[in-house]
Length: 635
Ligand code: 1YM
Image (cartoon, rainbow, N blue to C red; front, side, top):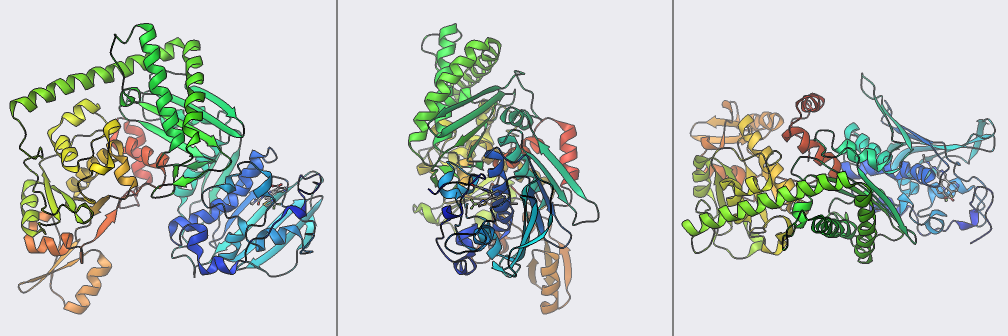
């Protein structure tokens, strides 16, 4: 590497790999997609540069705003992008950084910059996908500026003013190109959730975020001196912690740095959030696996040593994770991301590294904090007892009324095809709609499981009770995979699991209860894209003997124009239809509407479920008021 100047950077370090035309030709390859996801990644690509400056210890504050004209401003107080001339291109470095793909000393001088992450393509991709972009750099007493249109400079870098000595930083303003993205409407909550996470993961960093697009300005400021410790406390804000002081440790091995914080609550769910180079690894991976195996071993050893666990008694992983809220943040030089959404850490060596780091750190922590260790041990032992009691009860029931030959619930009307990739399970609200669905279905590929009455709220009941309830146990048996430690995706009996409920309040509630069950007990099915919600029509139009359906008021208008005015009614429920009609509207793969359930952000999803389905009333009300304008909660 060339000799560095006092900013630690030399223009020679910049390497140019490709042209920007490729970016506009295939934007999805560079920014992930051209929908809402990709649009928001435009902001992260820019703000990640600023976060890298904080990680390098040279920036404290990032100001981000969503502006009235549709543009976004990101400004930091770091060193300011280099402006010295590039030795080969003979152009100012900032121009090269913004206009050439993969131009950046970053790729060889930082072990794990954020921008080496999921897309990590850099600011040039944002420039190429923006109608207009302006970069301003404060450095060495001067303010430099250059503007770009779809990645091409509009003018040379110019000095537009002076700044006080010692002041430095970078400001980027960009207008996402609406001919590339199918939406350019930023979602405040999506961005603020991400910025809050960023600040939890980077202790001391301050992000001021404001949205001045609407009539009422929204703004939030994030700054957590306590980092991960404050993160778990925040995650537990609607739960009752069983120990005040969260567990915390930070260990390093070579360039790998692991930071972990854990706090147990009296709840029953497991909430482990993994991050690799500040990317939320929703699907987990080897870092999470390493932490889990250390926890199981250390808590078992501690329990045996203290005599809480009797000889031969062993806590399972599920036992020791009941009520856990944990964050593991890993900094890794070359992360490999796998899985459906590329959010699962694949690096094999990491499991052992984290396991041994966490084992020694947890042992130390338990020795030094016996009261915390005791509280956790009591909680895990209670889980073990409940599990053993439930097993006894289940064995008794099984012996009494031995299950049929198939071992499947009697209520399930199974499909005949054994080819899993074509099969579907419809979970239907109510016996009567269940009956109609059985008439309407394609019996080779579609199985029907009717649910009678409400499903238990698993957010509020322990696993033994939840899995012991008839509804839930039928459902889990029908799905085939099992839950928790015995979960096995290869045993999944259907490719699509489709929740079909009425569009009324009761139906919404049942849908929420089922989604809570899936999210807490078989999140792997959501991650792998197996869970769907059927969207029944909103309106029914009757003309003579014929019925037509519309799924939105827009569609209703259009349909009325073509069919002519007829009797229009609000579609009340699945029970209103006969088998053929249900087939047409909600079951025929050619004409039905399904929504795939997905989790974009594990932290936000946990917050949503714990708030909507948990115990705390006041925060729930606040959450509902805040989200009242959304007809449905995006998961
Ligand atoms: C609002 C966006 O881009 N800030 C920013 C970017 C850079 C630097 C500082 C920086 C980095 C380094 C040295 C270094 C970038 N530098 C490069 C390149 N904010 C924003 N602030 N000096 C300044 O990493 O060594 C790319 S981005 F190419 F110079 F490394």
